[in-house]
Length: 110
Image 1: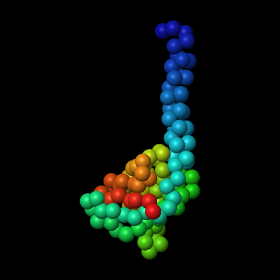
Image 2: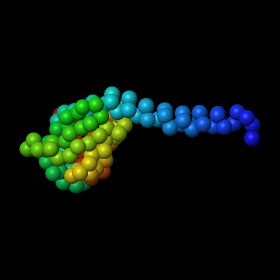
Image 3: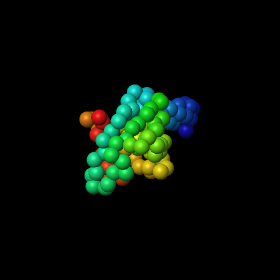
Image 4: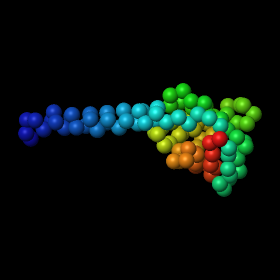
């Protein structure tokens, strides 16, 4: 094995793990999803007619029409959201600023 093989391999491995995490945080932090959304059933029913998202960095709080917190969520990239219990769903932020959820609903920003 050549003398320089091990150090070059270590640098390549460290770089492969370091770069994606840094880029993800920057993209997610730059995305602003705070606001009020109207829910459209596609195809599942909506639990609430409207939802509000409040945002601090990449942390989100989802509230229903009644103002009660439904779930905490996190921006996982500039186009994805991961919502925890009780929502337990993944969201994809669309170019028109709507959010399509894996639970079968779509939220349109007001």
